[in-house]
Image 1 (cartoon, rainbow, N blue to C red):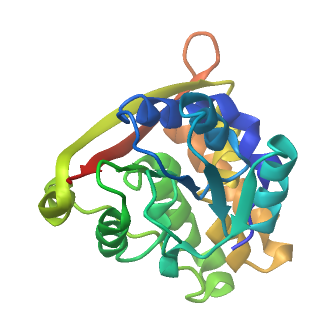
Image 2 (cartoon, helix red, strand yellow):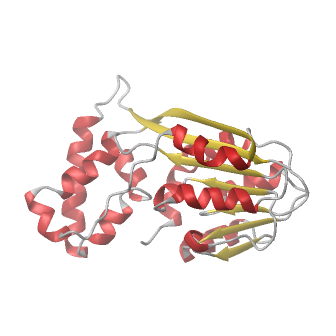
Length: 257
């Protein structure tokens, strides 16, 4: 799946706010390396460096475009190309920070359990994931893909993102190795210029699997059909702007000694 750093940072302030909120709940770290998992263009990495300047910091991602942007943004830090699904930290890390990445990985709870076990005593695993598949912004992607005009073009080439498990599932799975675990939801209401801005937002993330699965000559048509549905689902407010409702799940767990 291809990503675009330029498309992603069109809404950098809105995308970075959950990373700030997640980082605010991370306690002081022991000595050791902090890893920004799925670092994207480096916006979350920059926050971690400011908060924990005494810890070594490494950003990892599996997309060359994102890694190029991150290295340009923070040329003095190390960024590595990594497939998170099979990754293990090279030593006992102080922090494993993941802003909006694990929702893409199947069976990610097993991976989170393994990463928690790899932490140094007193280290923290901090994770944020979008929990928005029931929102019109995402439900309408699949609805559009299933229309007669597009079903043959997709021809089973798209596998929709799997809904997140219930919060208690994370607590039950991670609590045995945790000295502390906090799980919560936050719903953001992003004030965007218009419905087209919502389409631009999801073109950088949730729409990528759909667009990548389509033949290039059908993408404009699909986007137009999806955008029409979005305009109906997100009517403008009195000032012409729209509200994008965006639920996110947060997990902060600190490993016991």
